[in-house]
Image (cartoon, rainbow, N blue to C red):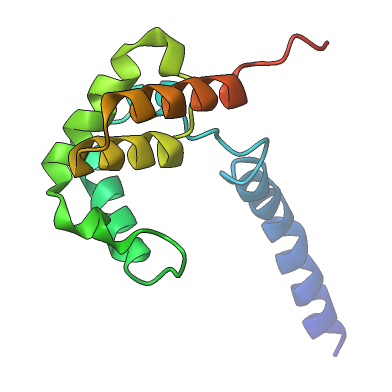
Length: 131
């Protein structure tokens, strides 16, 4: 019994540093990333394609989201988001909102309504000056 207890204690002491190291490097540490244009710009084209494919797949199972996102090819959505974020004023807008805007463009929403929507998105995503 004493040998078993000693053996268990030895394993526990040896495993503790490894567990602590894994916890320290766990990706959940720190604040979660903000999925905006700055985040999008750092992603590869392969990642973007996977992101949009997953988004389209998930949206077909989510109530309350326009399901017609699936009628647009992923490449059109990716190109639209890339173009959207080329304007520096849009970089703080979340990818979800950018995607909705691009979907509206592809649906043929009139430019005056798109511009009004874009101004609202920019205002909502503007960084605050509070310190």
